[in-house]
Length: 464
Image (tube, rainbow, N blue to C red; front, side, top):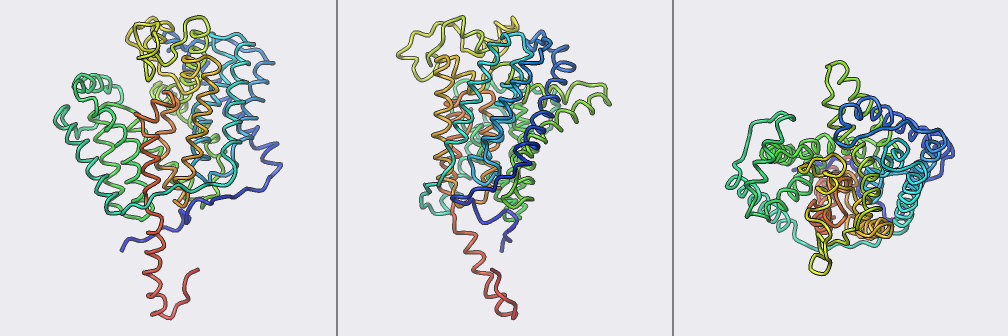
């Protein structure tokens, strides 16, 4: 019999508010944002911009007043966030704040693409949109679950896995040899070439990597079933070595970190932990790189996951303020819109900012919204996300927050380098909704009920 790990908690509360603690609002949050802002500024100015300026990571010395105002905006956005990560939307919003919102606001003052005034306007709009989303997800959750046989669910997930790995084996050949992070580009190019004619495989791979494998890991951790955990972790490593996507490798420590935070605190995990953790990641990566005479970790973590969304937001807004917006002409509205460019926006921006036709400067959800419809598009992206999060809270109601957090980690991170629509269709946001909606809610109670007679037979009090 599988043993339930009760540290994960019985499920997400439907309506719960945390008491206000003035020390947190007036000291801890501003301090955490200040430390994160200082670390991000320092690593960008000293370690990222000098070697990567040719790719568009350019730096200018900021002035005091805009820096202070950007800190106020970033702090205001953090204050609007739910204090505790108790429901699915709170986990998504805290992750999104760290990897997209805070960098986009804070970096307006020291990139070369916008003036101080223009940068502050951009930061203000992003902060206001994010505050609106954070306030909009509050309130009572309306459950949206569907009764599906647990056996049917596992059969479907196993079939998805079999089809995904079989197609990979036929088209690419599965690789079981770990590849160096510096060698992934050759593997990725080979994968992209072999993918031609099997377009569905790209969708299946990301659904497997961002939804199915983390579900296996979450279920294994929740039930302390090492077989399920190993299945998810080994499957993820095979996807990394076969496709060369580094995000699939980095997903593993991200899952474990989220699991540790949400499990150790019994549903009382303060989202501010993620902000402190991001600051520690920046500084720790820099220290290790200094000791090893390298720039690898700083490039992989600080540049790729934190600085890039901040820089690219400025770049997209600058370019599409001066050039025609795309109005989804490269996407769902291609049949109705005259698309003004020969290539998709990431390649247009990559060539504009770095002079490299092969560079794909993928935008985050806010940058993509502006590229499509300007300021209205940026706000619209926030509205779409708000609607999604309201639905997400409904379909995940009753599930342990640790399980939900693991499943939602990578689809949320995808919003830092792609649009909301693309993340929904190609990176697992919609697939996660479906999975969370049909996952059984009663198996925990059933297993506990089966264990109750054992307590009675031994003359021990029934657990409450």
